[in-house]
Length: 160
Image 1 (tube, helix red, strand yellow):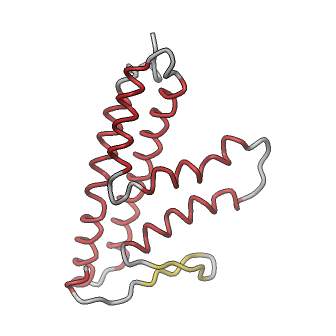
Image 2 (tube, rainbow, N blue to C red):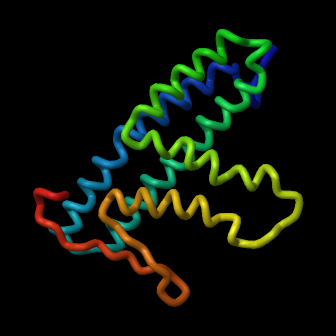
């Protein structure tokens, strides 16, 4: 019996559905939070929501792609199930945030090839994915001392 951590292999299809919902919702959630930020001015409150939503999105991508890749590796034994996964991934790739699937997969590939720790720069490709997503939502980051500075140019409400 094919199994993913004690769950049936179809469980990953549910994870891809969860990813689909996260991809559909995240931009509206961040836009809504940014609009609220313009009214209340509390950047910490805004940033905590952004971190929460993007963390969930990246987790959902990891779970969904991880299951899909595992099933793809078993495709010869389970062609029907693999085809269902491929169809869901194709559907997700057509989403405005669909670019993230390939970008995240490429960004984490070095971890799978790692034979010994090389340093923090291994995270750079994943950070680039995050920065692109932040930029799409009107947030631009740069290193500032030991932290980061987030620049959010003021825009009219029509641009939020």
